[in-house]
Length: 104
Image: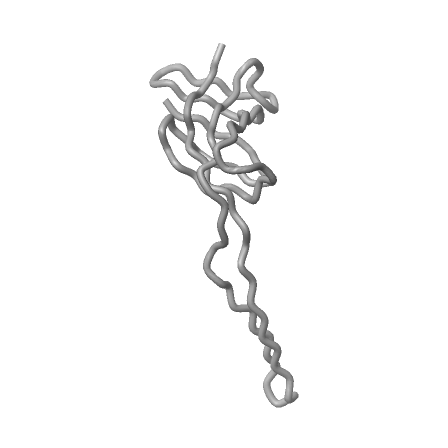
């Protein structure tokens, strides 16, 4: 059984017990996080597709840790114009563990 859900403007596929990195969530570690934006639930031959969300279903997860991803280099360059600009960016993330998938 797996679900597809939306969080932070992105879509994720998850199974029970899986660890996923989401966009930063402003909560402490160890707190349970309930996600209600379930787009699709697949359970062997039973498939539920939401319009736009599957009603009466949610994901219970626990926040494991917060962190930052690897640095992404941004380079802007124009040849023969004496123009070069470099910049770096490290995106914050929250790592969660899927505890349970609730469907009715």
